[in-house]
Amino acid sequence: MKNIVWIVVDELVASGLGCTGNSVVKTPHIDALSQRGMQFDEAYCVTPLCTPSRVSMFTGQCPHTHQRFFVDEASHVGPEVPTLVQLLKEQGYLTALIGKNHCFNGDFLKRWFDRVEEYHHWGKQRGEMRLADQAVYDWRHSDTRPGFAKFAQQGGNTVLGEGLIETPEPFPPEQCMTARIAEDAEDFLKNTGGRPFFMKYSFPDPHWPVTVCEPYYSMYSPDDIEALPGFHEIDWATHPFRHFVQSQACGLNELSEADRKRILAIYYGMITFIDDAVGRLMAALEEQGILDNTLVLFTADHGCFAGHFGLPGKTGAFYDSLVRIPLLLAGPDVPAGTHSRALVSNIDFMPTMLEYLGLPVPQTVGGRSFMPVINNPDLSHREEVFAECGIPERPPEPFPHREYAAENAVRSEEAGWFWFVDYTTKGRCAMIKRGDWKYCRYAFDTEELYNLKDDPYEIHNLAGAREHQAVRDELKSRLLDYLLHEPNVSAWRTRESNT
Image 1 (cartoon, helix red, strand yellow):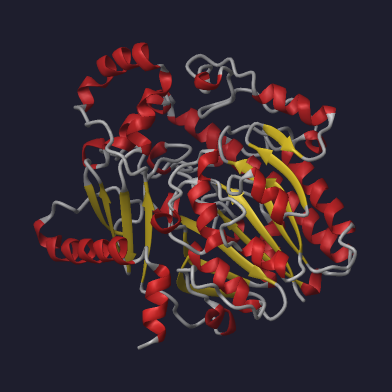
Image 2: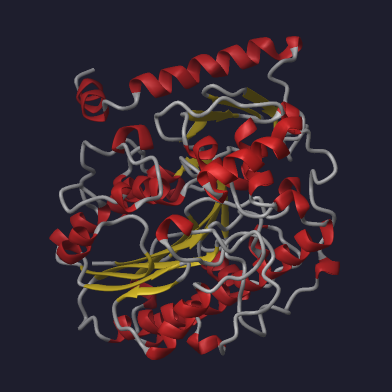
């Protein structure tokens, strides 16, 4: 039986690796992993939010099927929900979650994982806790920057948030979360007792807060980063209001281009720290003599603006910087040094893993295995991919951009700094990408249409252009079909099997 290591990096833009074309960031170990196996250049997540995307990966279902739309603990799945973890545990696999969770609730962790060492963006929260872990946790809960100190005011405390953090994390690398995750994984691999195992090896970084210890904090110079795509071109009037209001409320509009490049340089340092942890994992697999019997899947739950529109972080949007994700596969029977241009969705990951292991795919799974592509990288997989986002509640009405300052003053007084979150979380929105075209619809807001070949940074919204009306209407109709017909997965599979 083959082992499975599933590496999930949080908020990693697809272009943020050396092997995916980034000429600045150093990722030698991840690049080597790519050379050991297959790199997918057209992989997409089904939603740009952490928890819904992770649930989709491990259930093989779209968000409107599994009904997890937000990032709170209420959206985490319980032990009764069929997932890859449960299926492998029932096959005799040893199971471990090492790193960020943001997918499974406490009851699930107790029932289906043999070992849990859980980390969040603000410190370790479950497993072996050391005094050094507590020190990191305490520091990340003591943010004093003006404008950001109220980030978690509803919870009665403050935590590091978005924006520019002026100092490196004041701890040696071995004490910081990325290295501790690697240490916990190494310990797990030493104690498997020869049993086949599944390990979710998951990093909270490079998601904000964008901070890292030395030497990674100063590893990259902002001067080495090219002009940020779309920084001088973004016209919020032609883009969804939810993105505008978040950029303003988070103070991102007040950052200079130099500040934004500094944030991106630190983000790159966080990526290189993760790369070192990936190198430690591969070395540990080799040291235990199990590397040649282990499939390693490397991906991200979603992307990051990473300078697109001059912004850090993310919103509930469908730009390629947010929904296109890295995907690498390396292990037995995966052809080394190969690339695939097949269009895949992260709901396809679970059925692919099951077919790879020779296990049946449950009828609850809506994704499709891309094992044929692994066997022949020249094959295609999907003609289109979809993504969706948003709580199914009506968002507040947009207001004119020129009124933002006055509106912010009133609403901040009434509801605090986090008043804008209703705009960014409520209201369903969805996307379809087919060929060079992408269409997005935001309930109670606007629609977008982009030609990715001519406009790769999605600056020019063509949804209102008369000459592209036929393309827009065709994609809108197909998107509606997806939202109406995909939820009933079991019935669809039964119907398919009877035709």
